Image 1 (cartoon, rainbow, N blue to C red):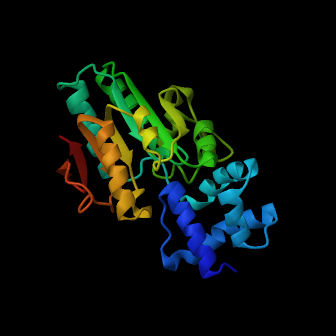
Image 2 (cartoon, rainbow, N blue to C red):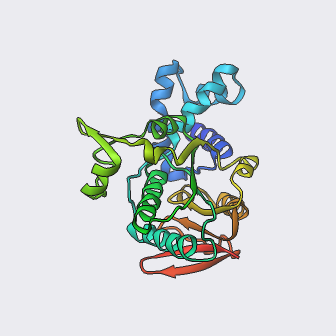
Image 3 (cartoon, helix red, strand yellow):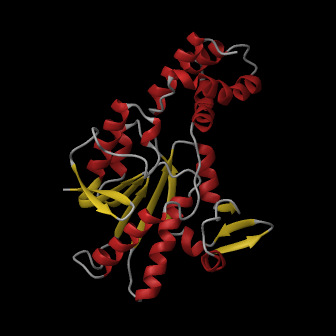
Length: 275
């Protein structure tokens, strides 16, 4: 059983490396997520595991990836939260098909994209717009995550029935090859999405993702404390082009985090625009 001292050591270590904060009442959650790692590595206590991570050799560096895998939450699906996707769809049509940004390459970043359903959803939306309007809209979507396990899954792009439960049958038939209750995304969608590792704690990592038109960072802030929230939001602000738009989780808010953005109020949701 994890002691309070072990919890504090590991909680602070996880926070230092990932920004994810486990409150005191989440000790059981951290314990349950790390139990299998102790068993597989043969450690007799959580303290031994901590010291191996903190002061260990090359083996400890490899274990860090496993730690990231087990402490992250990866609940996602295609076409999640329709009001936010409606805002995205409307802005693409208005600004990039008919407005001032007509013909400009669109750069989109899905931060903490988990197994990839979000960035692939955004690609499908744009492909549908291209087809309906018969206009060429160049675009690239970047999907990043801290977990090597979900990155591998996102690149493979083979999904369960649960992942496509909110996707209409026409879209599933058009963009997926289904077999044995698995749905393999077609290359015509995959080719627009670049999946890679990215730790939101590392400020230098943000340099790759500059001049973004849209950033989706949904249901991520809820795992951070106030200090980490401010740090991430400030970095995301710098990654947006002027008038670029940030979309966070529907239960999340930038209230008391940042006043740098202009809130854009839509039916059922709010988007945040860089000035």
